[in-house]
Image (cartoon, rainbow, N blue to C red; front, side):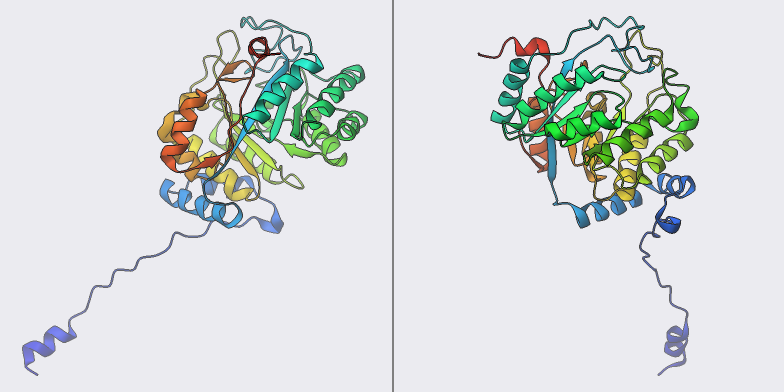
Length: 353
């Protein structure tokens, strides 16, 4: 071997190491700290999406999207002052107060939803806290919808333990009651009830054996640490919710939060990803504000682990993407779902008898 050849062989070689993304910080004693969740939210977006999708595929079939039906059975006139809500009586938003729908109206809507492929039917009523006589009426609605072979869900405000048990006895499968935000920011959003009231309702629902649907809202002027705190609150519930709706604030004129700065779309995607990582077995749902996200951001949300949407032209009293547009988007992305409908009380008058 020549001297030049030996010199070339002895020259140091450059080796490029391709490292896997560093694993996320693990919560101590099975509890997620705000700091650990902040570290997740701060990860490079591509690394975060990769981790979230990896977690997602460990627990859910690829491409499975739940399409949910939501009917407002009692609209407007709520005595709460939630700064985001157009149904609050003290805000001038153009939403009229209506009484609770009759059983036959709700059954007609539920049957139409079932015929369109729905398996779960959600009923929302704008109450601060229902009275026992309201629970009796809603129980009749639940029983009638359950009789159609559908899963049932309700969101009625704060509950006492005996009311939650009555709803369970009527056949209620899921109860929605969002935390909205973290305790330290909560009073900036609503002052007519305490954060503990929400936690108490969730405990009553759990004790009655009803599955929990609980999430929050981003884009209400909160700081990034508040978003991390919201995920920590949800993920540390024992157990964490079966369904986790992540809402992007719909800025409705007449509400106190109408002028809030919109959340950056990529920050919203990060929230979806971190919800998936911290609550791997939950349905993570794209809920209010989806109309403003656009197709590309929604696609990123599905990649981040979202596997449920509210489907239809209206979400209670705010806009939602056109149903046909959702069908086209899911088809483009190769995602699968069961066709469902969202129907308002006014639309019910157009259904055949």
